[in-house]
Length: 257
Image (tube, rainbow, N blue to C red; front, top):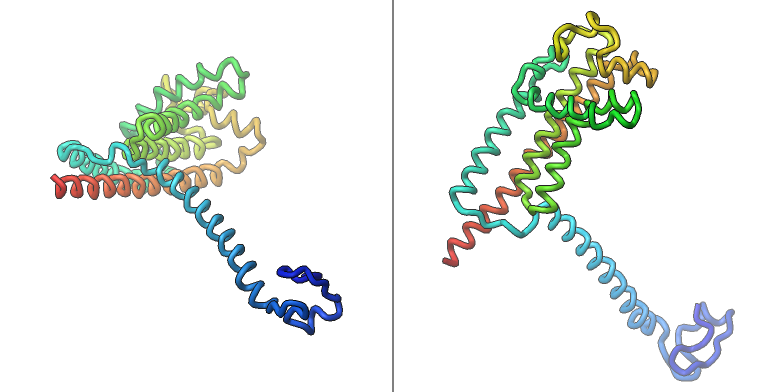
């Protein structure tokens, strides 16, 4: 509340503030002053906040869909379109698989993931037995994430990063079938035999036993599978958005030329 006139400085009694709407000394209309001055300042503050919010959004958009490298050669662009279509079809195939059948374990991508899975065991060996066992799964998940970050941050290649994210999603679904087998121990492991034939060799049996979660392997596997599916759909959308932006830039450049 104002206790003095903002224009002439004349004092105002507290009991007169509600009743009087003008200054008795200079005639200033307080309501108009408040609307003109306080309303203006409030609008400026709001505009500043809105501008800051827009700047934050632009920074995020620039990171996810960088403006650099947005005008590829037509041959490169349509090659990326073909790759996106192939990843879409292949990804929908993976999404359609039942994690309980481990059909995903017979795919070409499983063999790719397996290389980094085994390397992960070695990489995390210095951190103790539990981390060495978990390191197999961490290895096959970290490599596509590292590739995604490198392509996006270093190369400013949103489409390439979306393809790496697709790989990460597929690897998550690949892991889900392994988790689902933690108690059944029926999957054929590297080197031959199953977890039943070779006690103590199954990664996720050991992991879930150590965490006292072995009875929840079905729910954990299902959650991993659904997460992989969601991330794969995000990769489809991201890759499609990157291609659309490149197409618009390419067409715009062609018209100017």
